Image 1 (spheres, rainbow, N blue to C red):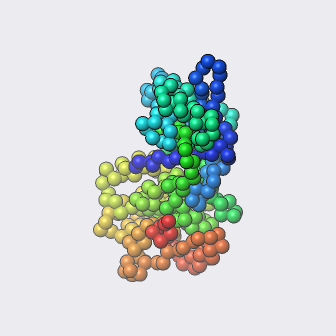
Image 2 (image 1 turned 30 degrees about the horizontal axis):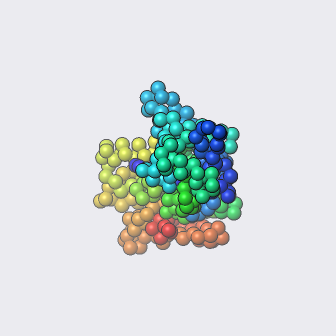
Image 3 (image 1 turned 135 degrees about the horizontal axis):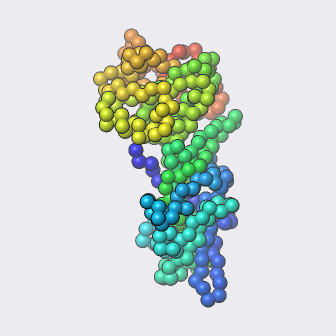
Length: 337
């Protein structure tokens, strides 16, 4: 399972330390900045805000040359374009270190035409933003929701840092992380939090297209569900082969042992039948294909209606309605953005 590379942009108007130039007589200019700052909330990234813990890049930027993985290789780019490279960590022109305010970079651009121009553009404030590209470790993030329904993603361990970049057009594009799964996650939490039977639930979490869409998001859900006294199983329509079981073990990592069970029922068996055969009565289904989970004695066309949630008030109303049913199917296709 490949984790998508994400980019974050910092404007000097919001973060004065994002990118600056230091000049000394007789020496080439040095570009410095903080990217990202620690424990500083981002703008809305499409339904959630984000912050980076001071531990986010531990074990990456402090890797030594004698580490079996080698020293981390991070280039300094302009606008994330590889042909506009002006240095990298492995040739000493880019230094990264954990500072009090955030991840600090010190860049001594190579004195090519572009390198000299870049320093002048930053000093002149023609370039006013910085960016960094990263991946979060699947078990290196937490997702929480406050009483007002605000969702916060905290990255406390990154699995990769791929470039630092000066940017001409700093922007705040919606993050791809969790966007499709976020409404599903919120309504699943709402049902779990507001059902009359709020403890002792057995919750089925789909794998492909659900867990795989945002592993960090669903890891947080499993932890929350267990803390509330519920259990989570994974039921997938993948065929029960050693190859698939190995793929699920690798994807879940240490979360695999936190699950109450993992069932691979294949395409020829309904998930509900597979659960019954395993002695499981599922109270909440989190699945992108509810048609494959009909009630006993009913056809797939009669599968329970999904719960739709768009606001906190709507979540509570929907959860109250869902509490009247013993089976809840949450359909990600209908709430995806």
